[in-house]
Length: 114
Length: 112
Image 1 (cartoon, each protein chain N blue to C red):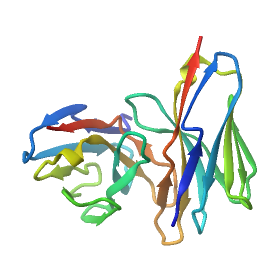
Image 2 (cartoon, rainbow over the protein chains, first blue to last red):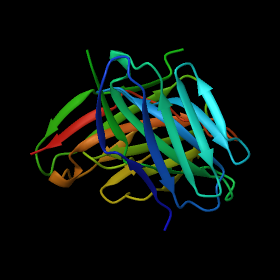
Image 3 (tube, chains in turn brown, green):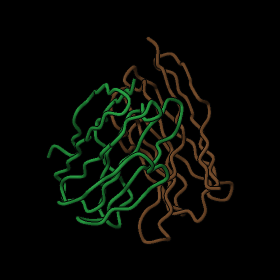
Image 4 (cartoon, rainbow over the protein chains, first blue to last red):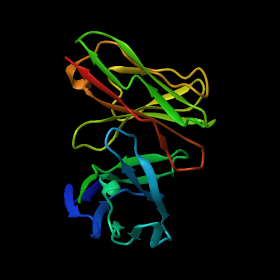
């Protein structure tokens, strides 16, 4: 069964600290993996996307990594800010049927404290 | 561009009532989707559409209906609301060949 699991479920860190969120998937075949940020009361917004051949992708203070062999991805947040408080969702896509199928993780809820 | 818009933002329904959640996008995207997000769960696909006049069921379609008469609009209909449909509903759109989805702000629905 295609699944995307994220850990931890929730995380609290102090402003200025770094953190790493994990995503493990069993989706096959694999097309790409995307990290979304979802602020409270808002829809998810794309942060990064990685295809099979990409190992690392950065977007400002956000750096995503992908190990397609072990089917693991991580999202590293550097020098966290209060505005980073949100849920982070890992989404794995399969496009073999011609249209994208998206499998969503349950998300990691990050709280950054002053 | 307004992107993806949804109305209403909040709604409380009584069991057995019906309502339509509105979704519109101004990016000329062919693909549109409806998801529900329950607490602590990942987004679940209810229905999707690959173009005007074409819709198909997702993972959890029971109790819902959709129509797609134009490229811009993709309303979601609840005919007989049940407490199990209490959730946050997100509409999204994307272009063919592009995996990025653009999400609306969501509709928080409570069925009592």
